[in-house]
Image (tube, rainbow, N blue to C red; front, side, top):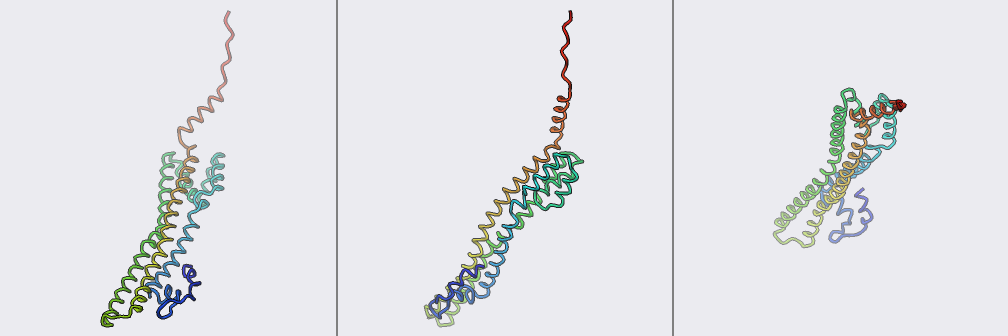
Length: 247
C-alpha cells in the first residue's frame, strides 16, 4: 500500500538520466535493500491491521458475554457459566473460566487463578504487538545500512573515476541510496505509532476486564457469604412480642 502512495508521481521526471519518482523510490532506488524494505512495509501493514482487529473491546471485554455471565452467576447456574466462558475466546471469559474451575478450592484459589490467567493473556497480547515494535526499530537500521553501503560504492566510484567524478552522477548516486533511509522511516513511523496506541489499548481494556471479573466473583468471598447469611437470618427471625405488664 505504501507503494501506491507514490504511483501518481511516476510521471514526474527527475534530473539526470530522466528517472521518474517510481524508479527512484521503488526500483532501482535503494537496490535490493530498498526492495527488501518495501516488502517489510507490506508486513508492517498486515501487523497494523491485525493489531486493530485483535485489540478491540469485543475481543477483550464483550458486553453481551459479561451480562450473560452475570445473569448466570446471580441465578447460580455455575455449570452453565463454566461452559459458556470455556467456549467463548475473549479475555474476560478466560478469567472467569479459570476462576470458576477453582471454585471448589475456595475464593483465594479462584482469585489466584484469575490473576494467573490475566497475566498470561496480557503477555500474549503484548507479545503479538511486539512485532510492530521490532519493525519500527529495525526498519530505520536496515535503511541506514542501505544508505551507508550506497555511499561506500559512490566513494569507490570516485576513486575509479580518478577523483574527478561528474557532479550530477555523484548527486544522483547518493540521492538514490538515501531512498533506503526514507523507506526505513516509512516503515518505522507507522509501526511505532500503532505500537504505542496498541499498548495503551491493551492496558486499558485488560484492566477493565480484570475489574469486571473481580466484581463477578466477589460473591464467592467468604465474608460476603457470611454477611448475606446473617442478613437473611435477621430477616427470618421473628420479632419478639411485647409482654403484657404484670399486675
